[in-house]
View 1: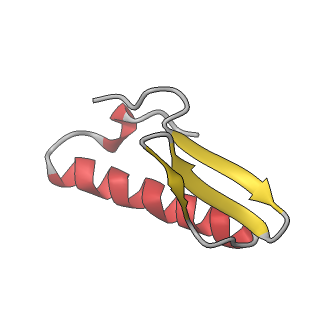
View 2: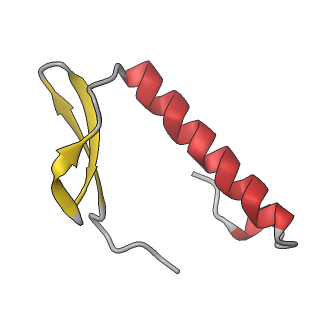
Length: 65
C-alpha cells in the first residue's frame, strides 16, 4: 500500500511544528519543536523497518530517506 501524496501534512505554526492528515483536516498534533518532530519521524521509520523485517521482508525494500 502506498500513501497518497499530501496525505500527511507537517506544518510550522507560531507555536511549533504540527502534524495532521487530509483525511481529518480539523485534527492536528500539539505543536512540537523541530528536534522532537525529527526524533518522532526517525522512530516511526525504525518501527516500520522493524515491522517489515518481522514479516520476513528485507528492510532494504524500503528506500532510505
